[in-house]
Amino acid sequence: MGIVVVALAGVFGPQWAWVAAGVVVAVGVGGLAWGVLREPRADSLTLMGSSIRPIALGVIWREHALLVFEGRDDVKGETYYRPLGGGVEFGERSDDALQREFREELDAEVLVKERLGVLENVFSWRDNPGHEIAFVYDAEFVDSALYAKDEMKILDDPATARWVDFADFRDGSKILYPRGLTELLSTE
Image (cartoon, rainbow, N blue to C red; front, top):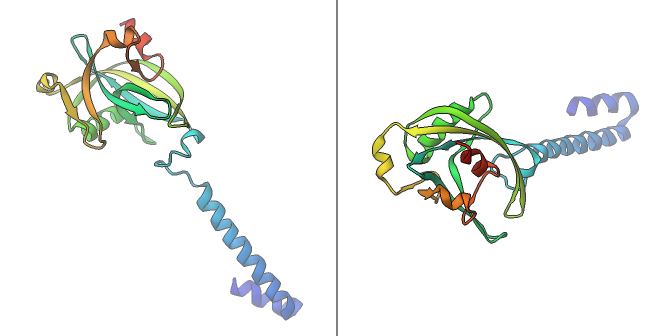
């Protein structure tokens, strides 16, 4: 900035140096503010609706029960359930993301089997818009002792994973997300 101001002062006189300094500062600060404000933040719910989030979900069965976590949207007054899994990071394959998510959430290894389908989920959660593409996989625990546990504390969240009878989702007494998952699993 100093070079620009000195150059303008030498060519046009000292009165233009102050104008040049003001313009450079305004553009510099404005440009910096624009760069900071437009940078997306993964943890921001306010930006949830500004992009599509790819996720990987694992469908793990214990007889007729599905392993899910229970969530709550107090704005809608709705309790819902979703299989475990989470976001696919840039450059990561969805099946690898699913294995990583189970390690992070339950400290458990899973065998990822066939992909059952891909679901598009456009929704609102706590009045914030969301849009996900969910890669849904059939999966199973490597450690069979985990099937004996009725509940498992999710390590990176205050939620708990539990087995819920799939009939509760099929008859509508409980809500299973993402939308279309109940129908996808009913054909299995």
